[in-house]
Image 1 (cartoon, rainbow, N blue to C red):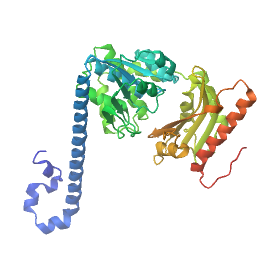
Image 2 (image 1 turned 90 degrees about the horizontal axis):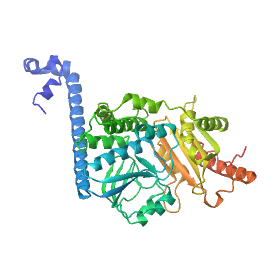
Image 3 (image 1 turned 135 degrees about the vertical axis):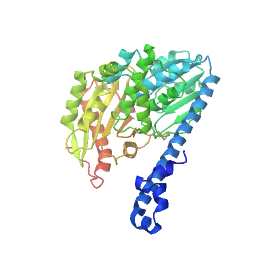
Image 4 (image 1 turned 90 degrees about the vertical axis):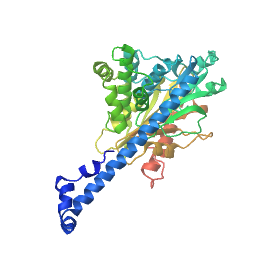
Amino acid sequence: MPSNSLTSSFPDSLNDEHIAAAPSSELVGVDSHKMEASSQNTSNRLSNSREKRWVESSTELKVSELRQTLERHRSERQLVIIQDFPDPDALASAWAYQLIAQQYHIQCDIVYAGTLSHQENIALVKLTNLPAKRWGVQTLKERDLSAYKGCVLIDNQGTTSQLMPLVKQANIPIAVVIDHHKTQGDLDAEFVDLRPQARATATILTQYLQAGLLRLDGGVSEHVKCATALMHGLRSDTNRLMQAQEEDFLAAGYLSRFYDPQLLNAVLQTARSRRVMDVIERALKNRLVQNNFSIAGVGYLRYDDRDAIPQAAEFLVTEENVHTAVVYGIVHDEDEELEVVIGSLRTNKLTLDPDEFIKEAFGQDNNGRFFGGGRMMAGGFEIPIGFLGSFNDNAEYAKMKWEVFDIQIKQKLLRLVNPKDKVINTD
């Protein structure tokens, strides 16, 4: 820091020359408050500067570690796994990692076990040719995985992918984990970069690009599309940058040099499907509002319509006098013959932690795995139905099953919303 930085922080009336000429009593009586405030501002700037240098050095260390890890795996093939129902942040970040790995002649296959049902995610993949593939559990069972020398987890830690048990069974080591969520258990990985303070994994990947792991070129179509995807992912996970922190804004500033605004606008302007609108209508009809919480069960949904649930929650939270919305339904996967309760939470209450709320409401399974979790302003949960699954060809049985799960989920939520009300109300 320059030697004059401290003196320049004082008001003009208190520069070195005036201080030397003025009596000490005058300084104490007249300007002591100014000096104290100025000194505090200087201290804050110094503190912020130290914090910024610490963050930058920490990022440089991680970049160096990742570079060494990639070098050790040069010319290998890796399996990049994202969560079963990937969001824009996961899709874009995985693509950025793939492009970085290509610099080391590492071939990456980006895969997910679920589906893309949100119209913006479908548009993102189609309009940018984003190279992510759906591999169901059965697909992975039928594949020869011996070619893969490492597994990479992007925007997840393996707890939100059905593919991880098969990857472990195939003895594929975890080479890299990059995520912005809290630690979700012990990670036996060669390289780990977990940053819960970052609002998006896209921010972390963009910092890797800024550090030179891949130099983006505005003249390369693939780079422009990936930068656009990263901008969308960053924007999506920060609620249109309204929850963004300094490093997220800096990442967005860097991406602004390369992304295609018209392409991003095309992704964002994708219309909601009629099925999504039907689910939103069901949520409105069935919602229960208590203590500024809106809770709605929407019944049975097709597997391909799963993303209608978070969209319905996003809609319900805009209602007057509602700060938190929870929407849930039973999703039926015909391919895997599975049923699972899927739920989504959206909130605009800053003091409500979605991660803590969902974990407190639904707890853990027998293996200690939480049924759900969240990040700032949003969360989700998945509860397997197991023995009671399927048999929906019997309308009466399907109705009874839904009523049981609907009551149970409402009770788990209401004991937190209304702790004093312990009576089961089936009306």
